[in-house]
Image (cartoon, rainbow, N blue to C red):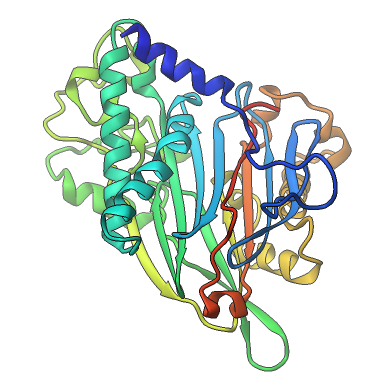
Length: 376
């Protein structure tokens, strides 16, 4: 039990930015230099197996709850955006384990990636986190109330797989016609109770529970508590043994839990990549709360590749400031924790698609591994 707690806490001190360089624009793995600007962590540009990428994370919470990673090698390219809630524990666990499970399961099929490969990696991650919560229950019970949305993209050969739990989102920028115009196409399915189809899905799954979705504090929430219906973790909403003291009373349900209320089963789609598919924007809900799909795609399309993720974060912050009738420069001076009243943690990864590399099946060597910072 003590070892399990130490393992979890050790994630807080895991080195970030693997593959970072100390001089020049890129290191040998094609990773651009990591930079910081106050609560912002970013890499303006870098190379991965199928093109260039840009990456940025803006902290708003007292403890950063968003995590993300890019991994590229013989398996293709794996992108993960993990939007934690209730604390950072679940998102850190997912960042440390989901890709490892994906690698191990892919190896069983000689490197072939399918929807089942990704599904099994999600399942193994949920099972691992559940086992950790069980070990920590008597010493660190609040870990049962932490969870994480999980958005994963895998480019394997000439196919993009997208798997999602929660309300992070990936949007494709696609060239249309011969005029150079760009269309925004959302590829991920979201699981948020504010979406009518999700409320309908929950009511169908729980027909005898009139309180399965409740309108509270201006938004729809599952059991009046949480907005997302699918996640890794949030075990207090999945297993009755964790919905009791000593967890905080606001998480404890007054009625019996006859079946899991939340799910860890991702929605997975496959998308054959076409030459007019230009770029992909993977981002946590913190970005999409302030920018539309079309606005985000237009920003990326209208400027050079370098700095794209940071540019999107800045646009979201400018919109957050406008909504509160304040100047962007004033918002920038607000410290973490207080900043959460204005916007959430924001994670953005932009992948630019080089179809010459994709069609040749280029393998990144040496492999690329980049993770965002744990704290800013």
